[in-house]
Image (tube, rainbow, N blue to C red):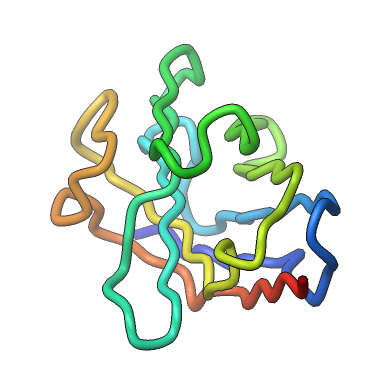
Length: 125
């Protein structure tokens, strides 16, 4: 079983950049497809980005494509979400998730077995 801890959230202004981190412990991260999801107040959780076990395949929600980049460092057991050109609508709690069974899961949140506790991002206009 893997434990996930997100960090890097905070309060930024529109147009700023920020990098979220998801550190894994308990198991080697390279055995998991990883995803980032977010949930804004009053809204359902939504997919943001995902990356395959080896980092060769990535996918993004249309709302963040071209602004966000997901990447991983399997040696450091960490997955990152680089967020550029942030918008107020990016405000949400961001969660990382791990799927141990699939090379690349993408947006299917039901396939992710392990979740972090989340980190808050607030983007002011």
